[in-house]
Image (cartoon, rainbow, N blue to C red; front, top):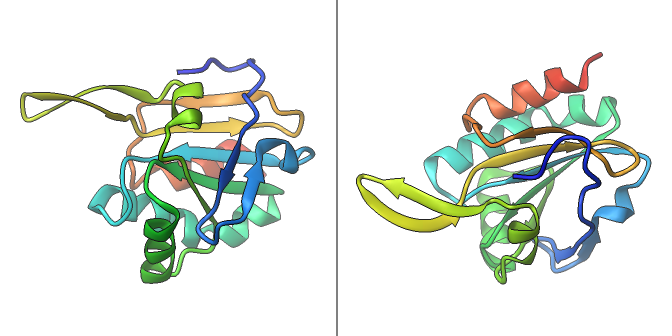
Length: 152
């Protein structure tokens, strides 16, 4: 996991509509960059819907939400439409950004060891510096916790 105080690595990834996004596009805004394992799974759906429900509050605080997984653009589009998500999902099938942000790790599930995305959330300030890094994310609590991190 990247550390608080580090410059966040810039990147370029397509969103659910195939449009390209760079972290540097959001200079001057706070960015919540969250990495999740898979579209349309229970925990990931809870987390995404929580961000979507609170989206107006994030906008009021000048924050942008970017969700990243290794799912395809088409998968993200289906997820966005099925859940009526209000924010941007970025597709990273080659894991370039997932690995740059050090969230591709060994995971144990029911005794089986495999590699996968560890649910991780970064809060990046207006200058592109990581001000909060959390890899102990509880999917259902993450959106509210990040809203509180932004303060009033």
